[in-house]
Length: 298
Ligand SMILES: C[S@@+](CC[C@H](N)C(=O)[O-])C[C@H]1O[C@@H](n2cnc3c(N)ncnc32)[C@H](O)[C@@H]1O
Image (cartoon, rainbow, N blue to C red; front, side):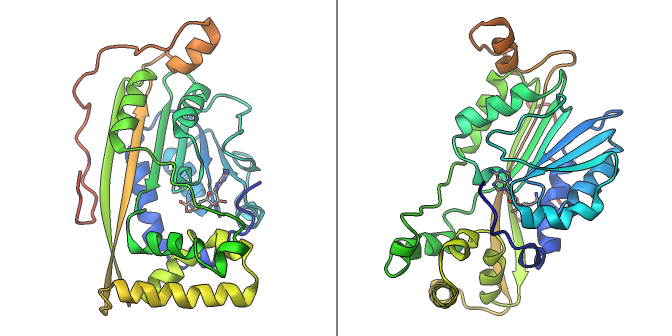
């Protein structure tokens, strides 16, 4: 199962910056009574517990493939807040959730053209899906990591590792949600501005997420060497200013099925019919809510 090398302590170093998009994603959800919620890639479960309380949910299950993350989540567990070790690619819920929620995790899962219809098909009638995915793949924080993975001496030790970037163009999610029969939809691209002490803080940030597969594959001293080179190249990209403005692009996708209807993918499976849009596209149902952060490119 992927994700065993996730380091909760390192991840939590940028806790507040990571919590804000989680809350912004939650604000897109339309609360309903007694919801059954699944939080895919729940990490340490701290935010899952917050979501469970915020929605006053009947039951919330946090799903993650990382043992270390789930060990942090375990003490938060109670009879209505559960955590389960599973891979998003193959996870199937015990009962159809009213909400599938996922913050900063689906960008680690490949083949979104199959993944999204599959997840939509797991929803209960009238259910909602809400996901936030970082899309900063063209920022030096990501391009430099890719460069290094392809260079000696790291390339050999990385055993051909290439970080896939499975996130599709934003408009594709709008199309998929429409085709899957989601009656209400929202797709929003937003730039979060993080003011960090210096560019070196980006290294620490990425150590908690993007660089996890490097730590997993490189022996200690080689990983330290990689970090040094990564920092040097990031500084060279500039600006090497103090403070350093770290712009971080995030994609929000939310959809709600019509009351009493399951997703077209599920209906197709159940009835053996080809997939079709439930209805003609209408105007966006609601204005994208501006977040407290500036720099939105909605
Ligand atoms: C960046 S963290 C996000 C954690 C949490 N959602 C939050 O917002 O703080 C990504 C999480 O996704 C999990 N993850 C990555 N790929 C996964 C997969 N295929 N199945 C289950 N969990 C996965 C990782 O273990 C990690 O805990």
